[in-house]
Image (tube, rainbow, N blue to C red; front, top):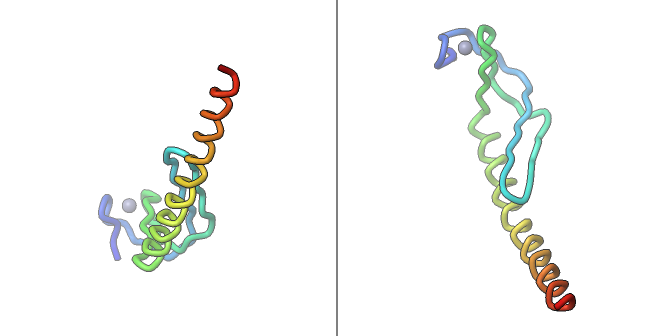
Length: 82
Ligand SMILES: [Zn+2]
C-alpha cells in the first residue's frame, strides 16, 4: 500500500480520530490506521471507518434528544421569566 499523496510507504499503526459537530465533539484514541512513513498522512481501515460511522450515528441520534430537552428547558425558563 502506497500513500496517495506522496507514494511513500504506509505502515500499520495506531492513530486517533477527532470530529467536531454541532452539539458534540468526539475524540477516539487508538484506532488502527495506516500511516505514511514519509508525510504522516493516515488512513483508517474500512472496518474501522464502519465502526466510527456507527458511533457517530448513535451519538447524533442521542445528542438530538438531549438538545431538544435543553431547548425545551430554556423555553420554560423564558416563559417563567415573562
Ligand atoms: Zn505520504
